[in-house]
Image 1 (tube, one colour):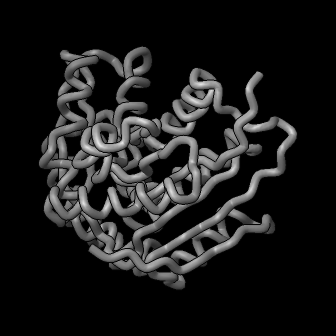
Image 2: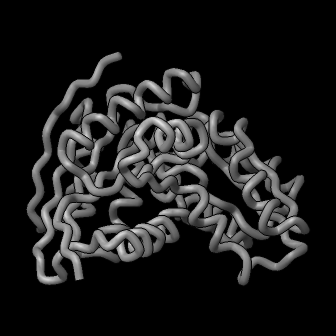
Length: 271
């Protein structure tokens, strides 16, 4: 078996992708990981496609300079807006978005006549990436979507457990849920698992789906198929970079890493 101890690169517009890193870390505890959170320029969801492409290419260059073996995009907005461009511009590095893995996992446990709701940023929802991908695999399923643009801003500010978050959840979703009565709700932004408990408490009858689990499983499959697995006996290292070292970002890493060691550095990226 070939051994490749180079790190997995993971990036997001901010701290939301840490929810994906948590799943990758749990499933692949011997794999080194480098994470970049563009916390200074978040949120991406209301920016132009050209700007998102520029930002994601900058981050890709940053990760490639650190010799990553694959790049996992832990951001639905970038996955919807820039994945194809990144694959085309960097054909020598495997990229994995976060949308396709969960869509591929749906057949087999989603009933054909179900209604699936998708919530995400403005860019993700306007792209209809989820809707198109789901309908290809499950043509009889009804897919509805709702943009929730302020969720990311509130979460990045550390307000995910504050009463203001409940108010915004109800503002965006009360009428939407009442109208469509979905059976499943895809959390189409990696920030949203941080408010999963609130959404579940307000709408207890809906099954919530977190794409991070499927992405982690797909990363493992990709490493195996490309013969890129790390030494199974290796003690993994974790390096975190951010364009702004906010208190919320630091606290979130501490929560994920618990007592494990990691390094955290500030890195400024500019257009």
